[in-house]
Length: 564
Ligand code: ATP
Ligand code: MG
Ligand code: MG
Ligand code: MG
Image (cartoon, rainbow, N blue to C red; front, side, top):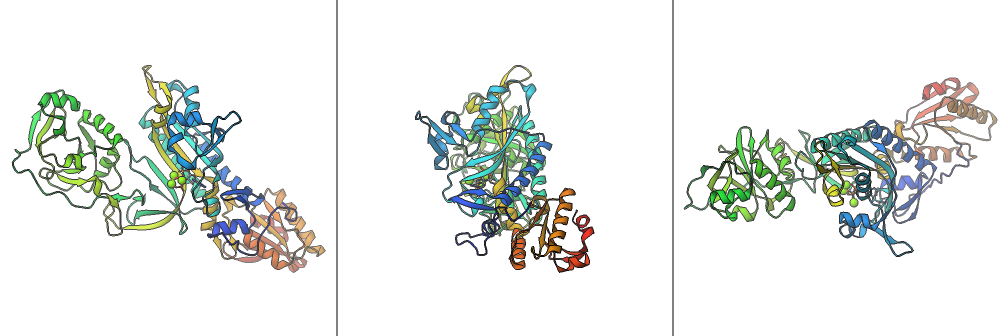
């Protein structure tokens, strides 16, 4: 492409209100212009980079078995009312009315639209799993749009949604997306880390954020310097290592009783003739051959459901405390190392911790323990005591040292489970003809934010330094003096040969001073520059590598081969 008529309005000076490097450089290098707060027009160079990133994303999504679709940006309110998010989502949802006074929203994300689609079009297990994705403009009325496209109100996102018949399928779909994300961000030349972003639901950790390491990141991540543990600080919670003092001296000793056939709390109440209050809601785990009693916070709806299900099973086999934590859906660090000889770590809330003569499961079918006294028979750790991890805490996974870093969230993979399929009736018929809700996952990448994140990691005081994979052009051909016949002719020849070879080139055919051209070239940051100057009389041009500053003279005839 020729630069003379290309809309690349570079700026000499830093724009006043641009606080971070990527925002400054995206404006100065003429990649984009602001239209309103958090709303941008992408100019040719910026749009080329965005397209390169989108191509990488498409290739990796397709390779992972996802299929591309395009959903509307305009959503009828009814869909959002069905999921309950019309009320729940809050002011970030851009709402509007049509001429008939009907409510609509501009999509900030597409769970509702995609769940309705699958509900209507897929009825049988035979069609599942399905993973659909789109690359599309999203709208969020952010409270503080800032840092250019880092936090826009209109931005481009890749969002994918998986639908499976069971948790196992979801695990696979999730893993496939996780792996695709690793490939995508690696190909974009990023130094990133996947961090745990929330507690896991049954079956494992349910969400990871992909963080590009950068001081301008708005998130803080806590990570272990020895093992793979890494979590968003918001979610990196630990329990202080303390338990309650033994209490209730008058209570008889812990006693195992037979409870044949008892599978639910109600049956247990009937069988033992105790009141419901005496049942300590618990799940027993087998960790390293030792029983671990976990009491679950009673005021948490989701955990209630889980406890009900798990109570029926009475015992869960788990290899280590981390697995227990994941099965429980507890936050990172929730369950400490299991080291008491009698094996019991109790995670309790105030509602159950004061039970002094309770009934708990016995880590085997058809048996329970009575006269259980938390604090006497088990260590008690309180959910309410959870706090953010600090540098003084040991790594909750391996005991190693915890460090902190700032990160930019460029991607997010999330196990949704049946939240939307249940609310919106997205069911399928299983092999036995039974109707079941689809098990969902969702997977987002902030495409425009990703471009800014790349610049944050790839720039110097002179401008952007594009990784080859996403550069708007591979080579910048810069004749020093456009008015000089020889230089112009050589530059034109070079440019034609590069095009011929399929190498994307930008020809600076402007009649500008050399200094201006070189400054712009550094600012725009194409990976390679071929400068055509006075030495062209000797058949030489100068090849310069933007990233390293290395330069050497190469014969004009060899130039194309050298940049290939
Ligand atoms: P954040 O925590 O930064 O507000 P989010 O968790 O709300 O992001 P998600 O709902 O997970 O965002 O959306 C998927 C991806 O979309 C994010 O990982 C991020 O890369 C991108 N994204 C989210 N909000 C914005 C925004 N306002 N501008 C640009 N990209 C965004
Ligand atoms: Mg947000
Ligand atoms: Mg977030
Ligand atoms: Mg997120």
